[in-house]
Length: 355
Ligand SMILES: *Cc1c(COP(=O)(O)O)cnc(C)c1O
Image 1 (cartoon, protein in one colour):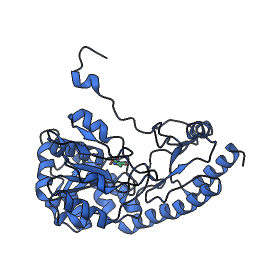
Image 2 (tube, rainbow, N blue to C red):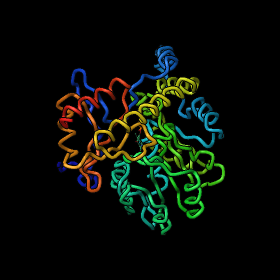
Image 3 (spheres, protein in one colour):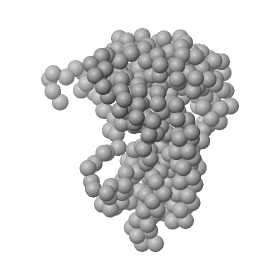
Image 4 (cartoon, rainbow, N blue to C red):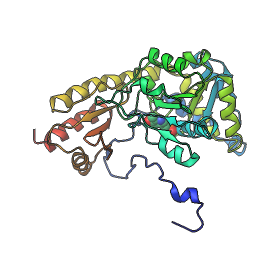
């Protein structure tokens, strides 16, 4: 607390990301990063961009990257917006579309916990229709008057995905609201809503280079939407920071889009690990709903407290994520690691649970 802070800053409860501790031989399965490195072409491109040109500002419009993303998504350049991680794109979207609405923004009670933080920061009123007992999102809950809708598909931290047809129906029923589909995990087996962008001017899709593209450290995210939504985001961005993406990030993200084969293989490896780990966890008595993400959300066996289990694993240099939240406090969110890391996790779990 400080007398120098504004009223609003006093009231904020900032988002707390998963920890990044400096522990030797740590197995880090807590922040949904890729266990594999980015394409070698990305590293080459960044090395090449590391030159005297760094004295120059980057392209404020990020045109080359937007063109590459338009081609990748089957859309035009004016359907694309890029930002410093998709968290920044989301923050700009909250400002551009969800502020000063007569009705509350809607998002699920169990979802990405950054959304309520942006609501506080931008003073957005919100309601959270609850997920059902199986942690499914019920789209009927989103047919009430609203000032916008946002949810991840697949949802975080449940990993459950909605089919494209359900998203189409939601858009049809909410023609006057911006519907933001946060596709941070879309590349691990969910159909993207991007093709609907040409049909629905109220749809905004966000994606990130942090997960499937193995570039969380580079900070690149993007949005796909109608030209009017993209222009709204650009107006806010240009009133805030002209250059959110630096030269190295632009070079790296562009190079990633030129090596799609590499990334398809990477995502397939994660999907294969997901099948393996889910089966192994179920053998140990965990309940593991089908995940479409690069993590599994596993309910601990009866009589095993999830919070305590997370602490025990941490003592053995294995980090997973536990949320102290009603409804999900007996679940662990476990990021898929390499096959060796996943095996190690199962071995340590067997030992910890004395199985
Ligand atoms: C990881 C994640 C993001 C943010 O990704 P960055 O691009 O790294 O900022 C956004 N939404 C969801 C649901 C995520 O899990």
